[in-house]
Image (cartoon, rainbow, N blue to C red; front, side, top):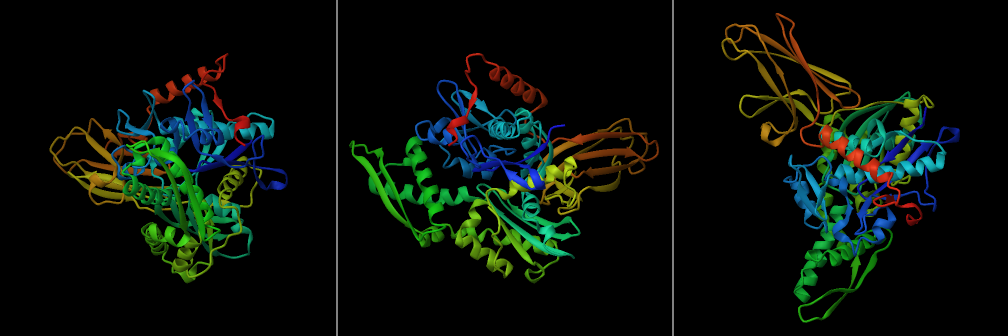
Amino acid sequence: MSRIIGIDLGTTNSCVAVIAAGEKPEVLADETGQRITPSIVAYTPDGEILVGVLARRQAIPNAENTIAGAKRLIGRKVNSDEVAWFAKSAPFRIVAAPNGDAWVRIGKEPKSPQEVASHVLARLRAIAEAASGEPITRAVVTVPAYFNEAQRQATRDAGAIAGLDIVRILNEPTAAALAYGAHRVKQGRRVIAVFDLGGGTFDISIMAVENGIFEVLATDGDSALGGEDWDRKLVERLADEIFDQYRIDVTTIPVALGRLKESVEQAKKELSEASMAIIRLPYLATTSSNEQIHFERELTREELELVTEDLRKRLAAPCQRAMEEAELTPRDIEEVLLVGGMSRSPAIQAVVESIFERKPSKGANPDEVVAQGAASYGGILAGTLDDAALLDVTPHDIGIKVGNSSFAVMIKRNSMLPVRARRLFATTQDDQSYVKVEVYQGTSDDISGNRRLGSITLEELPQGKAGSVRIELIMTLDVESLLSVTARERSTGKQAQVEIRPSGGLSRKELVEIITRRRKQQRAPDGTNETRSGQADA
């Protein structure tokens, strides 16, 4: 049986790890020694698909066909606020799928973010196979703790397209705590917080660790807040300055926008260590009078913090809610672990210290720790490790539609997994022949503010007056966050059962078609359309 690898599929960067000799997780490097793979996929004019550094290198001249940050689209509708915000500075086109999901357009062909992400997963799988010398088919893949069911299912579909059996979807903060070795620090019960601010998402998880068991007490976050939003704020500021000076809107010029974004991201990273960075962009664009724009500007850490102050303020509320859900105060939390590239920022670390009233721990590489934790959990599932067990929670309320627009919660957010809930209700009409139950996920009392997961219909009910026929509804959410719903008529025992798949996403037919097409492309004798990274990922 092949080993189970651990994959951190990040918004900005991804990496893969595996349990190595000595039962320690090891982040695997590609053939050039690179341990981190940029989560970028490019489709070239001659039909090649590039992944990683090679894709990033050609992103400027091929900006419209180079997809970065696909994770911010996965499992989301094109008309959502998060997608609209992302699209404002994306150099590629975001379009609506037939079911309303957010897809990207490559030339004339729309592609799902699941298919885009699958190329990154396939690259990581190839790195693991080269390192181990054996086929790899199974993986633990991490997602933000605040991902909903649609986003988790979309991640599974991306794995299927890449030829991977995702044996477990694991929350990123939980994976990080496992990799930090929080269960090995001391005997007795410890309460820790994992603050995870990555490229596209923010999670906060509070957990208790005792006798090798990680018990998540509460989780919260913002699935539309990450390092890319810091980049976007700076891009907007500089684009406005360029427009004021030259009357040119560089956000409408894909090549210029791509160069500006790349320069801003690099400057932001430098400002984690230095107090000042320089942005130099010669020949950025041409004015209407054929004047070349050579843009150069100093950017200070103080200015960066001022421009992004509103983003930092958004970090406090999820942390406060998580502590309230766990019925804890900052004094009850012994340690705060940092995860995600943005956690390197001194301003972010100051926010963490202010919220939790203690300096955070920085004992692990924030870009690699999640993949290491995923690999450790893969070892637990495979039976090679046995020093830890995870008890996770559901991040969102799950319930049913009541009346015209009300939402009745059955499984409350932060319920320990697995969890089962029951509800008894009666028919509302005389001789009612069937009942249809619609299942939703979210936090709003009004159903329109939540996401529909699916429905179940129980037919051929016994005749009777309104209120005389009783139906029991049972919801079960397992440790992998898979939801099943059973509706049963009490007097006859007649029941209907369904495993809920989130509305939207890829249909089974679409998924099979993509997998079949990918296999044909991989067998192409002339190499046309084959994914290429290899030596390019240097």
